[in-house]
Image 1: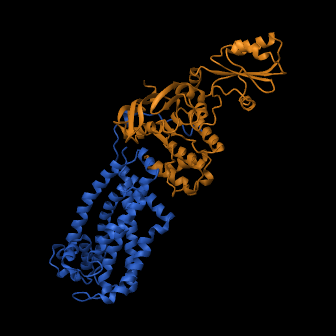
Image 2: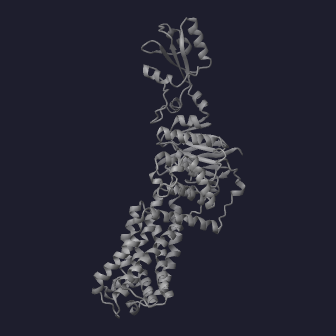
Image 3: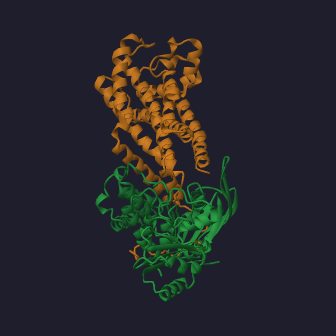
Length: 340
Length: 285
């Protein structure tokens, strides 16, 4: 267990009548990234607030960097960097002043804090705005500055609470790049997000929470497999009315054919060797296929399989079961790249 | 990038016992004080209650009320009023402490402070020190305005400084009551109402603006035991300015310097621990 840097064990927390956490447990191995995924109000932020010493659990235990969060909160604070959901910056100070203040309050000497601040401002592409008051920063700039503040003392454990919520796609990419580089440096990261693609891209493991409970825990791949459904799409070189009959036995289900008869789609339970089987069957029937795609389910499929509901407000997951009808869906998913 | 953010090996055993040296605490306080002073420099209108208000009050009181208020025992109203104006302005300016803390607690910045390994009371001490510095500016403005309109003192420099220090010390202790109010306020706006509901009556029901001899008996009793009266009378005594309260038999009026120091120490001894207790409670969830 020496390799576990973050550990939540049976955390319960209620705010008045609202139960935020109802027995949440998970752990994060040293040097890895855990994505805490769930819709708004699932309890992600509460879990982070407990682990970062901001909130006390009603029951349960939490350890960070081998330290009991409840017994040694001050010691825990020396090991962690936190980028909160609402950027916690001083709007009346400049970006540089904010970082120097955080450095000084963390025990750095002023000169040391200044050097480090300059380094981070450069790194986060904020050098040009360093001496401007933060009140005038854009959302993306605030997030980057907040991330910079969380890294000031080079903490071994990082908590990033919805680092890209509310950002435009370009700023989001920028924050992702920064986080990716961080991940390579050996820090342990707990990242909360509502975005499936974010967890998929950045996290080694994903813990899905809903209504204050952990409903799934695994690698992105494991979670996708757990939903036990894949999607098959075949694009024919020319119209082949008999193609649907040829592949129907292989996919064991209803095949949807597009209006022009060139595209076929089906949902399957599992897909080992399916692409090969499809190619062979189509070849034997003398049908030419331009493209065969067996697509893994998206995390939204996983969420749907686990909870019976789609992730609210998610516009990335496109693989909801039963939607393989209609030309536009097929056209959209073509751009996601063949995996066959 | 990788080298710049490289992991610092955590050594739990070495960091388990956190002891903060006095120097470390002082550095935290200095950082917080500087931060609050930068805030003031960004929004100079925050200073209006310690710069414009004193000038306005001085001119208003001296030219409007001055001629109409006789001083028992003689002396000019200008010489009488200055200590009162100092006490009035410094008392009401402690509202800034309440509003400042309420603002800090209302915004996300407090969570940043709370996850840093800092000495937490620095948030309160830094605020009170920044407000003490603005109170010193206020005292300077009052003194210069007073001198410009004809206030004079023949006391020796040490006694003059002593008079200012007496009032400033009282304002500092009062700012810890303001801190308690600010910490418990739902919003900066509700913290501001503390000034009008508590501080203005406190400053006015006293000997600061008028001799208490003309007040109804019950009100005079309150005024004579009001700490603001002791502070004002103490400054008047130190400055050698007219002090009609000297003829009042209430103990604080007979010993205004001792009484005002006692009040300040008492308020500080109660309000400072109370404020840090409130602060801890407010920042626990």
